[in-house]
Amino acid sequence: MSPIDYALPVGGIILILLIIYLTGGYRTARIGDLDAARLFSEQVPGFAPKAILVASDGLAALARDTKSGALAVAYAMGDKINVRPLPPGDVAGYRVDGGRSLTVRLNDFTHGSVTLVLDEEPSGRDGGLATWTAALDALTETEKT
Amino acid sequence: MDLPDPVQLGIPAFIVLILLEIAVGKLRGTARFELRDSAASLLMGLGNVAIGTVTGIVILAATVWMHQFALFDIGYQWWAFVLIFFAEDLCYYLFHRWSHEVRWLWCAHVNHHTSQHYNLTTALRQTWTGFIAGGWLIWLPLALIGFPPALIAFQKGVSLLYQFWIHTEAIGRLPRPIEWFFNTPSHHRVHHATNPRYLDRNYAGILIIWDRMFGTFVPEEKSDPCHYGVVKQIGSFNPLRIAFHEWIAMLGDAWRNPGLRGTLGALFGPPGWRADGSGRTSAVIRAEWQNNQKI
Image (tube, rainbow over all chains, first blue to last red):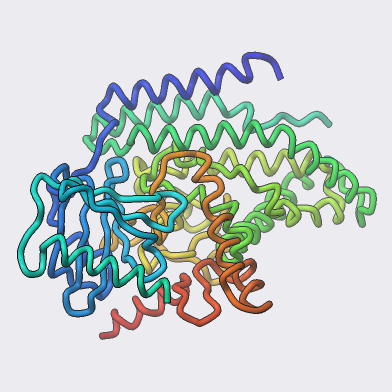
């Protein structure tokens, strides 16, 4: 192979990415802009998102089916939103940072954790931070047993 | 006979067509490119070419070795080009179908499906681990029949080149005879979709007739627009994670599933299979969807 055989694909990739960037191709989806409840109910079959915690930056959200106790998570993936249920075994743990953020660690090689930035500590009977951590505790405890 | 490498010749066309697709998308207001997604796809393509320069030699050597036992001396007559066109395309259909139905092969193929976009850069999101998976063995019988190794390699290149242009939303439906006989952007959109109706359908390379013959054909429905990617969307644009995530998941499942049946099922069963029967394979997802349709 001649040097041009290598230079052409590399040069082509740089040119294509530059054009995509210049034509507005760097976009990040925000859950806040969408109907979060519809997002979860459409993409997780049988899941009724009665309580939803959307990060203040709109990059992630947690939802809970208060009847079944099931949890689901959503996070921005470029200009798309990935939504997935969180069955026992998918959650490795979580961390609360002084009520300012909640980080859920996932057993997922492609996306190890989801952080929900919180402007203020969530409150309410179904939506308080304690109810979210209790739901996450239930999942991780189920995994331990 | 010296045959050209179609993919190598096609690289300038790949670049021009991607730029054209971006321009058309902008003009129509339907541009669906995302920088990190396209960067991942293009880097996967580059890595595939780099790895292929090494593994291609081994595959060619294996094909040449197999050819010494050839049943017929086919050579390069005009009809050999016609025969290899159909024979190679059938091999591709089988390879592609098994790559979706057998977890071991899926590990190498899944990365091609991990983009949630469907454009010409997605076509270049190619495997880095195809050699390890061994899907290339499916073409070896062609050498045993008697097709020259260079002719087999040429036709594989033609097939790969053909499959580039069908990764686009810029082209709708083509005239009926073409849609009936050939794999088209419409048919291949179905293949990349995660809608239960479309899961694991339209495995064709160049000719859609194999799917029609073997019962795996589904047409694109306007009422059910394609959603792209994989059932459990991946959360990374890192090519290394894209290339290896399913291998890691499969080995984890093989470790966790109890007994020999569990281990073999995790390695060679359909993607999503679980020993306890709770797995959500494509067949299960489709059956659930069909039941819901009836209700």
